[in-house]
Image (cartoon, rainbow over all chains, first blue to last red; front, side, top):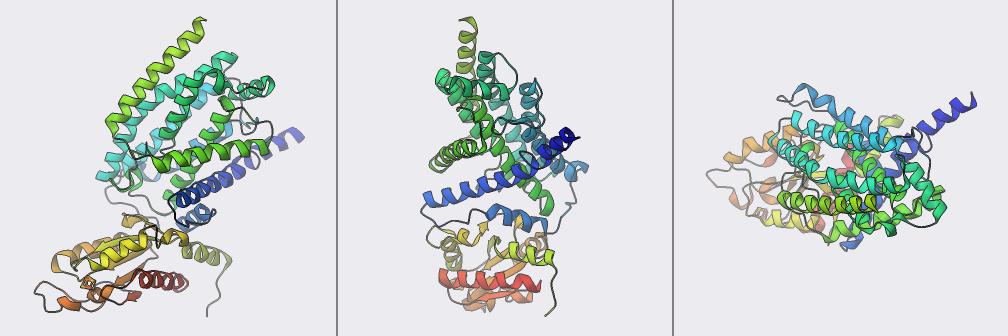
Length: 302
Length: 147
Ligand code: SF4
């Protein structure tokens, strides 16, 4: 009885959905504030994403005339699959839905959240949305391979398929796996930028160029779902990075300190870098995939 | 004044603090356009009120119209207005949009903006200063209660 109650508590409240939605919206707000300060502006308050999401929930939902049936359905899939992902990844060593083969499920769900986002774009049949979605699908081909290989390097080193165990291993040995595998760590970090669609790799939703890409047609509640999913995805990627490479975290305060430092580095990169073109993205990521594959093979042979 | 429920008060609060604007330049001289861009720039920074420039009427709350309305742009203006989700606010920037301004005898000018779509806030001037536009934006935010 107690165990069942604790299970539901950990899924719904801490470190489950309630905690994750709130903290990831807060992180997005911190990111916007930091960006504004670095551009010498005052910027929005850190709770701005909450206000945006509440406002979007209170607006009208427009159904486009040309939209395919999936138009109303894919945003919900995006949100749901992001939540599954958030429950699988250890936040300060705890993952409510953890199994012993987490890494495989995480790899699939990461690809699936991006895929469902771009399916949402394709089903709205707006030319901008279709352009953005096709760019996004091409970008998946670019970054998915180096991301998976970079994830496998620490997992093979510890000899497990669960990020929570890698987290525990780092805490026990007291060293960061980033220093054991600097190449894989850097590649993981660069792939994280592309997965979270942070500049310089926000090719699918380049808002100066294709006015926001895949979410052009979405309004109201559905767009709010996409915004929440985007924030949660950034948070999830940061916590996966901490669990696999950057030291691990034993309690929530350590976790928040480490993730804020990572968020700061992400923000600095996103402010100083300009957007790259889609062919440059492909070239860069195939090169990174090649390098990190060599590192993996060398580690396996030694 | 009508009493508002809790949900309505929360959503009014959120709407007031997150105005996303879509900006449209019609057939004026572009003076008002440049001043509107100055409002978006770091010096005046509407993001401190939570505002964002969305180049996309579907996600915008406030339509900012600058310049006189010509016959060609009239149908596009109405289309963009209709694409915005309810509730929405329209701001008219500059004397061209409010009256016809210096273009009042033009053969292709079809009337001030409020003959075409309902306008909530007028910002006069030729062109108005960025401070005046910001002031108009803040006046517009007070209007969410009435919508
Ligand atoms: S109001 Fe004046 S500055 Fe503005 S578009 Fe008209 S003529 Fe130009």
